[in-house]
Image 1 (cartoon, helix red, strand yellow):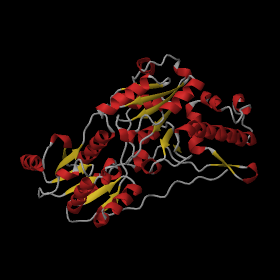
Image 2 (cartoon, rainbow, N blue to C red; image 1 turned 180 degrees about the vertical axis):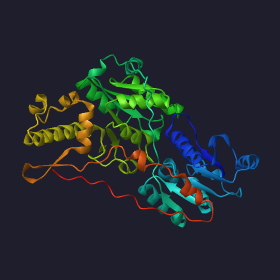
Image 3 (cartoon, rainbow, N blue to C red; image 1 turned 90 degrees about the horizontal axis):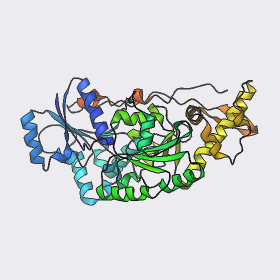
Image 4 (cartoon, rainbow, N blue to C red; image 1 turned 30 degrees about the horizontal axis):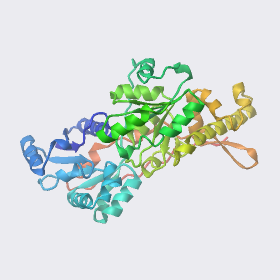
Length: 405
C-alpha cells in the first residue's frame, strides 16, 4: 500500500521523532510510506494534487488539527494519531475544535497513546468514540558511543569534575506548553546550596518570542544552562550520562523524552499532569511533582527513605552497606547526591516500602526496559482498518509478579 503520512516535522522535536519511527515501522511492514511536513501544504487542494501525482492509496496524520484537517475529501481512506497539543490545547479553541470533529467523522480510525487521551477525545467528540483505539508509541534509543561528556559540560559552561556532578536534564522544544522556566528558580536555589547540582535545558527554538524570554531568564540564573538542539544519538548519550531527566510540561500526549530516559535506565522526575501520570507511576517508575519548591525534598527524601530501608533489609540478610549511609540523618538530603546514580534509580524502581511495626517489604519489581517491547506502534493492525475490516483491540498482558521478601 502507498501511504501519505502528514506530521509537523520540526527538527529534533518529539513529534518529528515519533513520525519517523512510525514511518519506519510502516515500511518494515511492507508499505510505501511518504512522510511529509504538514506545514508545507497551504490548502487541501495541494494535498489532492500530491495524492494524485504519487498514486497514493491511503493517508495518516500525526496531530488531529495540524495534519488531520488536510486529509478529508480526497477520496482515500485515512486515520489519525493524536499528538497531545490537539487534545490538550486546540480543543479549547472553538473553530479548531469544530474542524477536528469533522476530521474524525471521516477518519477510518484514531489512535491515542494513553487511556486518558482516549477518554478526553471521547468526551469531546462522542460521535467518534467507537473508532478511537489506544496504542502506546514505540521508542528506540541509540546513544552515540563516541560522545564526549566532558566536552558537552565545557560547552554548557559547567566547569566541574564530571565525577562529582549532578546534571538534571530537561529536554523540550522552547515553547510555552513545555514550560521550561517552571523549575528554573527551584534548581537555582538547589545549586546555591549544593554547587554540584545543575539544570540543563536542551531543545530546539520553536517559538522565537518565547525563546528570547527563556534565554534572558537562564542568562541571569545561577545553576541553569541552555543548550540548543542536538542530534538524536548525541542527545541519548547526554541522557545516559545525566543524573536524572525532568519534565515540566503543562500538557503532554506521551513524552518521548520520558520513555527514552526509562529505556536508558535514567531516573525520571515529571510534572504531575495526565500525560505524564499515564507513563510514570509515582515512586515506582519515577517521581511526580506538582510544585517545583517540593521537587528537591520529594526526590531526596524518597532516596533517603529507600536507602535506609534497604540498609535495614540488607542488615537482616547479613549484608553490609556503605558506611556513609549508616550515619545519614533525615535532614541531610544533599548527602544522597553522593551515591551512584544506578543505586538511586534501583531505589526508585525496586525500593522498600514501610509496613506496620517497622517491617520492610521489597517492592514488586517494575521492569524498566519494557518500553521497547510494549510501546511499539504495530503498523499492520491499523492499516487493516483503512479497509472495511475492523481493528481488534487486544487486552494488555498482565504485569510481571515478584515474590515479597
